[in-house]
Length: 310
Image (cartoon, rainbow, N blue to C red):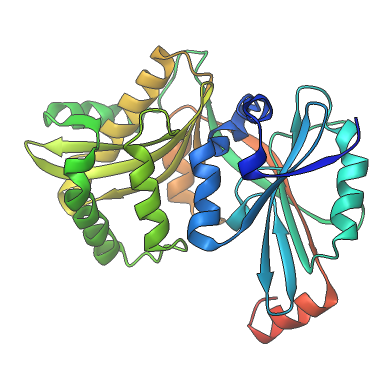
């Protein structure tokens, strides 16, 4: 079968299932989540496929040309399939090259030892913190102690629903005011995620930790049949005092294991953030290496330099 290019709305369920069985990347391939990038940011989603090998990608027009990412903002993606993705790679890369994109960014997760990206791509090594749920979790002494403390406070945890919208927005506002963090994703994106959580099979879940009726912390998770990905989280000052984040992670890890999922991904840690790295490794995670492959045309490099991007 020759290479075929499909828009997301033409993607059959049989091909989507292949993506949803791609291991650590699979939580990003729910149909609802894939459509959010189009709805909120105007990226045009496409899928290149040959037999059972796939490359998801998003195109977006800019003033200097079209850019192409495996997923917007550099999330997981790359070539995937039930057989070696090397089968697809030659035709897929030829197609991508023929489009003359001014920038390409493909994050290859999972890694495929048989796959070789063209030399025109720059390669960057990335690392995430992955917990193997098929084995008994061994928390660090500090993590185990904080989990016990969180349990002693009598917190309750549950999935957030429509009645919790105002409380979640208040939680996010308080978290940002307390930490000074600036989120790179828009308010419209988070609103779209919340709407997805109202559907049981959307692949997006928001879980909260409560003291009586007060929401102290909330986590956003992307979930497939095999994998759970921690996307984002917020806590109030009281939530930090009561170790609410420890309560949420502990409950979600145990629930994920009970539902037969294979991996729990706490995501990457920013370079130099030893505290966050220590927190994530405290859950018994192992480092998983994957790679980002990028290309920028000369005109894009110049435009980026003018904007202060190296």
